[in-house]
Length: 391
Image 1 (cartoon, rainbow, N blue to C red):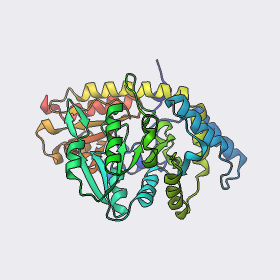
Image 2: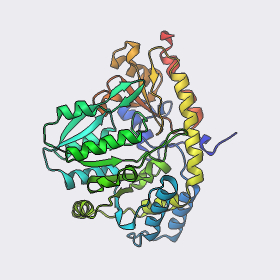
Image 3: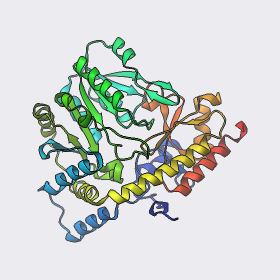
Image 4: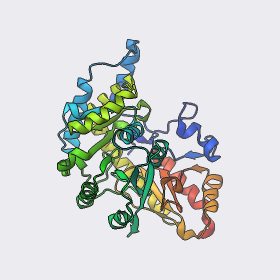
């Protein structure tokens, strides 16, 4: 059965960082290579999004955006329908994407030199923002047990210096695809209370959870820590709207929200008109599209894992969410330079380097599976051929 996501769309020459920058960054030509690095999808968004944009273009006037009632209603409706989370209008702040939101949170709730905790390996932009804001990166390397990551709060606690003021959690986890259990999340919340830490919960992948898995909204399971909890969500990963640069910062506590709002206002930021329009449409009418997408990506995941795991010494971590495969090459016995060379030069695939995700990532590469199934199959075949001497 053909899916809408089977359509191969040529993104070359469209100012796509994923495709148009992969030769400069990885030495992989988009003409005969496969871009599997940046976390956006090679899929069209729900049709309602493009219809909304077409109507805006037809109208022809693109001034400042105002009257965000429909936008906030769409976010609230989505969170209630999909996550059982009751969000209020005044809790929602809109930022120029979620990386910017992390920077604003750092400025609002910490000072230069403060320790900011990450469970690594984790999304590389967190560390970049911590360093760029002159805060101190505190890496708590996760344990790899049974093929899955586990946070080590005991070791983290023993390592604290007392300068730490914030913990940033990726839930579901990127790049491991781990969906944290309620008990694990509660343990993190209790840890933050014990050590007086602001908790920034980045839940940008919360809609991309596979059958049999259950994502727990942090605010929903621990409303008692709302005075230290900053929730980050967005439609960018869910609906492939990253270019709209629109992030949701949801803070229920008035004092915590006021501190964020002050820094946000000082930055002089205002919403991107097209990002708001796209998000409103997607959150209002994107349910059926998302259901089909998640099933499709799950199918890609199974094909990718089955094929990659036939390569001796190579292991794709089983993921419960996201579209980002985390592949370990440790047991090949190869030096990092060698397996990277095979991926880029022999297989002609551009994928993210594991070390950029922090401690614990040295032997890994991250592959983006949000692409047509034929492309995933081709990537698997190329990888098998590139490592065929190990068979």
